[in-house]
Length: 403
Image (cartoon, rainbow, N blue to C red; front, top):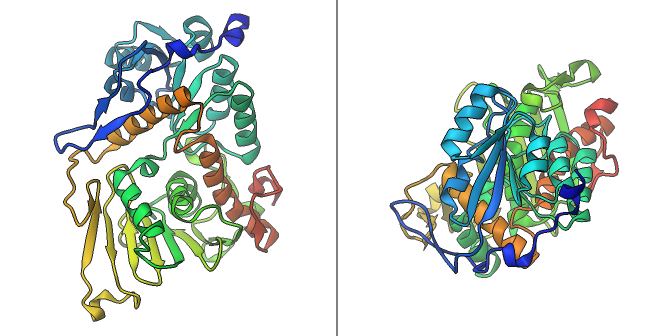
């Protein structure tokens, strides 16, 4: 591993046209402006049957002309062969550590959706001097997140987290209109909900809640405190209710969760999830209530974003019309037809390249990934202590292990 550790990325190897111009076109992905340069060597880590390749964190590089996938790692032989074929990867490995040592990539997609591997994989990438595009959520505990960040900071490496909503052009328009034009007046409430399907409760909080928490921070900044309750079968959960979560999530508890967050000034945030009898996945997203009106959004790079200028929050009574905010701006139809992960992942990949070249942080950085995780785990910490908890949390262990 010595050669790998000693390797550093030369600036002349980086993209010279780091400023990325994105033109929204209805037929497909944004176009790229800037001067082409030496291609980045990219590797992909997946785990077939145990998180696979996440939400397209492997194939995203097929859409980024400044990169070349040089290798893929997957412990499953069949999955490894399939990945190498779809990525046109010349080399494939069963052991991702061996791949990093041999191939010396500059960027690595740590793609598995399961969380049990994120910590070890990111530490291995950091040891080899690799920047990382990481599937969400970041990891299982704040202690793991702290270790991952420390390892990346030691080598001045960048990590981008797969929170696609943060890269949405529509939400960029919305944030600017709220912050600069006072679209909603003073923000007083943010209301988020998970998908509330069979995963309602603890699994929903961890897997989908990370998107909602990141959106809350995107619009309102960092929360100062959290007060929450976790319930199972309509009673407060205890140590006996703690279970190992699916997909390597780690400790989970509860089928019903209610959390309150205090932001700056008079802004309050609320997140709830339960196993809904009706309308599962229909309420997933965030609503923002201001003194002049309401904004509601789903998640993703091309979310449904609507607002109404009504300080009473009763547009049915006031007859105030709902207006759309699209990738093209306020009151304009959505020009982008691709509403899946492909666009969001490409925006993240391009921004990661920009961050590497300019020695800045990605728009959705490792710090943002940890902050969303901290909001999630603050729910369990508050429940454990039966009191509000200040953020950042002093306890870096998983609170459910301390019940």
